[in-house]
Image (tube, rainbow over all chains, first blue to last red; front, top):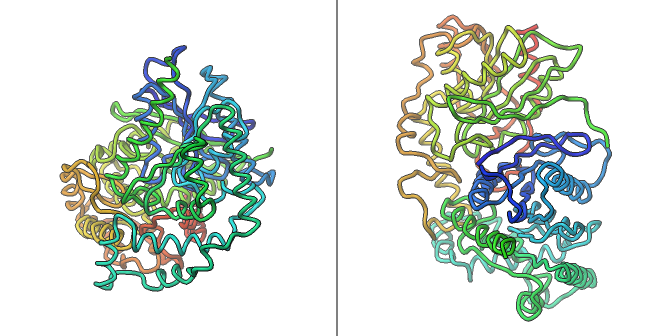
Length: 300
Length: 272
C-alpha cells in the first residue's frame, strides 16, 4: 500500500491523503472511494476510523482519498462565503477531478459519518460519476433541501422517540435500567428528551415534513434511475435513526423493500462515533461488504 | 475563490523506516525569524480534540515568522502504523526525525518544541535526551505517567457510564487494552507508568513556559524542578477549560485562542 499527501482544488488549498494498492490501478480496478469529514473531525475520522477504513479498502484493491473540506483539518478556509452545503459538494467534486486527472479514475463511491454522510448524499445527487453511496449515521440535514434547517418540531419528536427507544427497545436497555436504578444517569437530560413526547405528536405531520419526504423520495428515485441505491448504516444509539424514522415513518419499509430505493442496516449496541473497538470492527466489516459489491461489479 | 496567504506543505518523511505524516507551515515572508517550532501532539482522543487548536497555533506562529512543523507519531493520525504499535522510545525517535526535517526545511539555527498533555511530556523527554532546544512550551503536561494511566481508565469508565454503547457485543482483540476508542499494548501501559518528569535531571531546554488550563493539577513542583536544573521556566494559568476531557461529539471542542495567543506571544518574546 502507498499513501501520498496532496494539495488539490482550484487554489491547491485542500489537503487529502490518497491510499493506493502497491501495484497501482488496473483497467478492471473498482471505483475509487472518497471519505468525507465527519463534522469538524479532520480526515483521520473519529477514533482514527477513516484511516482504518481507507487502509482496509486499499487492501481490497480500492484507491481511497480522505480529504479535509475547506476550514476543516489542514485545508485552508474559503474567503468567498459559499455556504457549506455548496462548498462541500464542490470540494468533493474537486477531489474526484484530481483522481480522474492524476489516476484516470472515472467512477466513484462516496461515504462519511454524520455530516460526511449528508455531503455524500448531496454529492451523489449532483455528480453522475458516483455509483455508490454509504451513509453512516447521516445527520438530519440531508433529509431537507439545502436551504432548510432540520424541522424543529420533527427534531423534538425524534429526540423523544430516541429516548423511549433507547430506554425500552434497544439492545442496551438492561444496561440503562441498571444505570437508572443505581443513580448513574443524567436525569436532567433524560427528562428533557422525554419532554417532547406526547401521543398527539406521534400522529402529527406538518406540511414541511410532507414536502421533505416527497423531496427525499424524488432524489432516491433519481438515484435509482442511475443505478445508485444509497445504503444507510446506523449505530443503534444514533439519534439520526429516530429523525429518519420520525420523518419518513411507514415509507421507509416500502423504500427499502418493494421499491428498492435504498437499503438500511443497524449496528446494535454502537454509538454515533463508534467508540468501542468491537463496534469499529463491525463497521469495518459492513463497509467491506458494501464496497465488495462494487469490486465484483467492476470485474463482471 | 480566494484564500488567506499562508503556505502549507503536507508531506511524508522517513523516521527509522516508518513513513510519518507532517505538515510544514512556512514563515510569513517579511516576518521570518531564525527559529523553527516543532509541535508535538498528545495521544488518542486528546490528539483528535486538539488537532484544530494545533493547526490554528501553527498558522499564528507562521504569521509571526516561525517555521512550523506539525507531525503524527508512528501509529497515530495519518502516519504509518496501527493503533497500539507505537511506544515512548519510538516516538522520541520520531521527534528526533521531525526536528531534523524542520531544521532542513527551514534552515533555521534555533529550535523550539511545543506540546500538550503527553505531547508535552514527550517534548521534555526528547529535549533532555537530544539537547539543543532553545525553548519549550509544556501545556498541561503529564508529569506522572502512573496518574495519567489512572485518569485514562477513569475517563473510559465514565464514558461507558454516559454513552449509549454496549461494552461488549462483537469480536475485538483481547490482547489489547481499550481506552476511549483506541487500543493500547499492555506493555505500553508499563512504559507510560514509568514516566516521571520530576526525575529528569538533564536540562531539556534553555527556557520553558508551563501552561495550566482551568481545573488541571497544579504544576508548581514541575516549575521548581525545571528551575533547579538550570532552565529559565515560567508558569502561566490559562483562563480556559482544558481541551482534553473526552467528548463523544468532537465538534463541541472549542479552540482556546487565549492559550494560543499566550504561546505565540511568549515564543516571540524569547525567540526575537
